[in-house]
Length: 228
Image 1 (cartoon, helix red, strand yellow):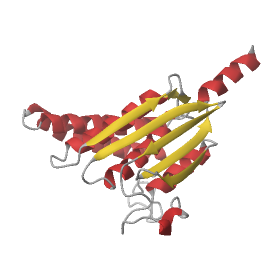
Image 2: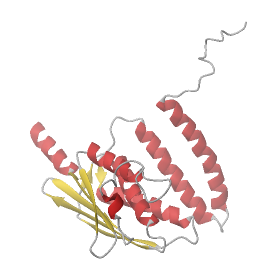
Image 3: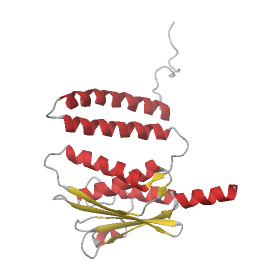
Image 4: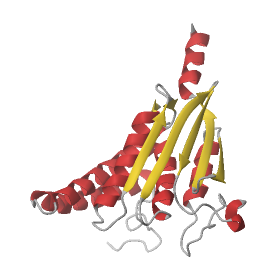
């Protein structure tokens, strides 16, 4: 029996979120096999470990896409995950710059939608690494301001040029020919979390990004009080 040429249900790929995640998991599984072989060789064990950790993070992100909402998490944990990713990426480049992290975090800060905040910090950290090709320090500050949290990420790069300062968070605005989405993603996520982000140049040199966002811990405490 010949199939109806107008019936494409048997040939169309599954373009639903579940189908795309299934395909991504197949890619991850292939990468796991290659990373396992690298990890078994003492010469390449650090590289294999870095790839495996990145794969695990990718799996966790795809799993989070299938859930309604994302869990809240302590700022320290969110930062540690983002920093570990940057350090693993640097480990893959033997001649890469030495990047240091200076953290001054007030204890007990909680952020809702932890995966989204990891994306924010990863984009900010990636920008900082790119503008410090000879290495440097990324400064991170997190503190409460009443029922809000102020987050600051600063670098020791050349700073932001006046030509792009006002358009920095717009898509495709970058000093690179292919780039300019990272900070647009940062602003989109921050605004989605009812926050604001602004950029400036540090007096000592380098760029500084300041984010003000509601304190998820304070929100949870208020909800508990109302229910009581």
